[in-house]
Image (cartoon, rainbow, N blue to C red):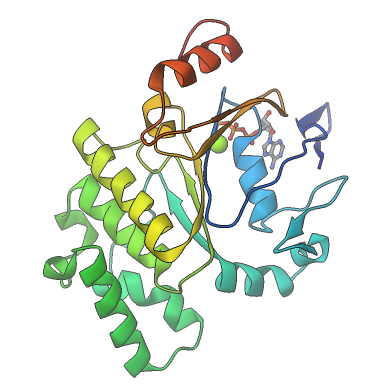
Length: 244
Ligand SMILES: Nc1ncnc2c1ncn2[C@@H]1O[C@H](COP(=O)(O)OP(=O)(O)OP(=O)(O)O)[C@@H](O)[C@H]1O
Ligand SMILES: [Mg+2]
């Protein structure tokens, strides 16, 4: 796939003829410098945007038409859970109503909403905060709620853009272990954008983006993977900085 953004003055080649396969049940970390095309790549997968050239197969089927409405919204509702660095919780709703939101949008019955929300709150150990508002929770607690909301519809694909970017080291560990358990127990396919090589050790595979291309990849043979090896590859790509 390629993605070109045409602006008045100049053209940005955000993705340049990238080719890759993501396997069912895999956790893939996406690393790369700022502006290298990571979020653009997630936007293609979630049908938020269409490739300018090339095609994408989702579940083995050609998926380019998915980007047109109303297909795109339907596809996202049924298949994709999103997790963001800044949580994106609705401040006026309590925890259980935030989690219920995607089910309400999917026209699920009240009885089933209650059952599913209860189940996911127990699974993520957040039932004790059921009546709390987001501002009463810590960052890690908020991210647990956001993950609960992302998985309550049981989507096969979870996309996470810097999910631990706003969290301290211990909370980062906690959230990553939670993502790994979701992958193992629910066979969810997880794509995780991160600037942090430590976060990438939790994935099965790391894809390194640079200037719109996938320039390298790394398979984590064990779990957690080899931090030094990932750091070395990342340093190569960032020209020695090791961070961006
Ligand atoms: N809607 C858009 N219109 C124009 N240019 C865009 C648009 N979205 C992204 N770009 C450009 O495409 C390139 C890739 O952007 P992208 O957001 O995918 O980078 P990224 O790897 O996610 O960076 P970061 O780590 O900073 O989030 C950048 O040069 C960006 O300015
Ligand atoms: Mg981005």
